[in-house]
Image (cartoon, rainbow, N blue to C red; front, side):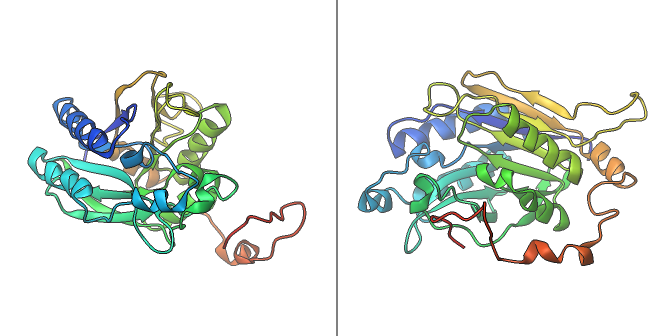
Length: 292
């Protein structure tokens, strides 16, 4: 499989669900015209990443994964012969979840992922966290590729991308809704480097509060025989403006690189990492709003 093209839909949300539906469908069509294999939305596109304090209002904005909004993107995926990663505020009890559904090019729902690391120090304290990380085999016109998902703050925990790598992920999709600055971008670069995976992150553009564009992608290939020394794994970094930005992942090159390089799961010693599953928390890391 020579290439996987991910359309990073760095879009300004509309003020209504219907507006986001129609704009989302329009930009998926544009992505297909640009040759995309996957169209990926920023975090919680259905509501434009809006989490009201009023619980009744929050719950009223939530959608089931078989709602007409979500299903419309599955239907379009089949029509366009293109995978779509649609993000939304998902209706579950007792509180909604921050969720992505990935539809393949036949309109099949491959996976549903809810953000595990909710920002409990902020508005996401009113959301239900997800329970696990998932990887799915995505059929494209060029071949199959293993896709994983993590969402925004998941990026800040090396365990997120590590688990996805261990489950076989070759490319990780990362919807986002926060300022993409040097430290967050560096985290994504590190997740790609240490796991030898592609990372595709899509953010909202400048104009959306607390966002600044700079959707970004890394191929995870730190060394190439044709290039001296270590290389920048950056594929693309968007501007701050609204638009579609295509991240073109060299899948065969990533696979060849992973077959002989030293990162990922090549030289790990899991039996020495027992402290990583110890749930005790000591100062200075105790936080009153922490949720398991």
